[in-house]
Image: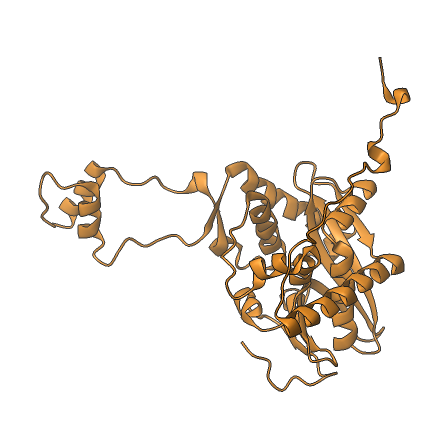
Length: 316
């Protein structure tokens, strides 16, 4: 999809935009820029014209399922299911019984595939939903309920709130002065028109929602770049509004511990530096049509401070 005519300082916000439409719409995303900062070759491998389809890992599926359960509850049952609840495939005898009931003749030596073709001439209807392990599926349901009953997040993620669905999965598009189209998709927005404030709620699934562990996640997954990217989008889409970015981190296993973290000015500033570097690098690579991987040099490898051995650390 094209965003023709999107002039500088003319942002566009799309409510209820289906996720596939968002992904097809032109524009640079923060996820793509994270790959670019690994190397331009990584970006091309993941987002270039010859990029191969990427399939969700079990961890990614868990996160996608929770997002659907919390942010798009009306779609959840059409997207995911507990594989243990699905009826088993009919046996050969059961297929024959079904044909007998329909008074359809078949060779006694017919194989299963032949019987299925007689029953469903146009092809057996396929279940397009994503199947999940029963434990994972149950944990997603329980995690979503924990979010909705939490002292802080319960107020934010309550489906009964007026206009709840409208402000979930909101797409935004802006164009920089240099002509680059940037896009992003907010998990949830709290829009205070009277107080002129936009709060961005970003739902993160994690192994540990402890502060020290989530700080590591911010570094490992460049959450600071995401916070800066989305803050920039919101500032452009709602000029003059104060913008606050909150991470709502929830653990993937019982008791589904929750921590809420406000992105600090320093975190945002660090992300802005990455954002500027990524956009500049993209422009250079695009102009030269050159997308290199890592520098072809030999590195000196040393250990970080926390990895250095100390006899005092021995317990024996």
